[in-house]
Image 1 (cartoon, rainbow, N blue to C red):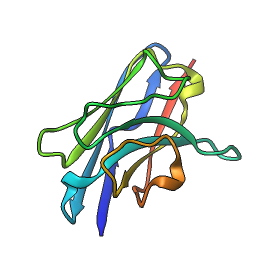
Image 2: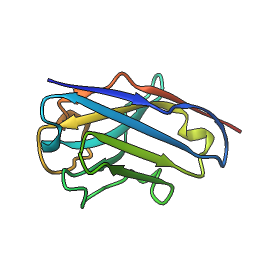
Image 3: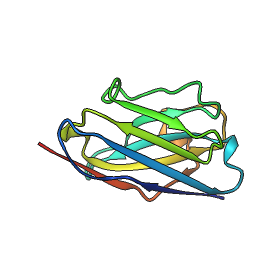
Image 4: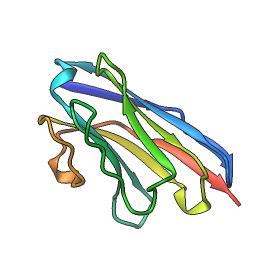
Length: 124
């Protein structure tokens, strides 16, 4: 089993920045690709960003390209999401996810483990 815990969410004004963190524990973390998704109540879960095990491939959702950056530490036990130029439409609960594969995926159902989520609220 893998446990994922997100942190770093909060309230920020439009144009501001936040950095989300996701810490993994449990089974060997290094074999997993990681991703970030977000969800607004009443709407479908949306892909934000993902990163391969090696960190060399990192796809992004169209809504966040050029503003968000995903990264992971060298020990591969944490993944981060740097969010810049935030907009009110970025308001959502952000979830960290891990999958038992080397390659990043943009599809939520490809992920085996999920965190509890962290709220990000961007005020206008």
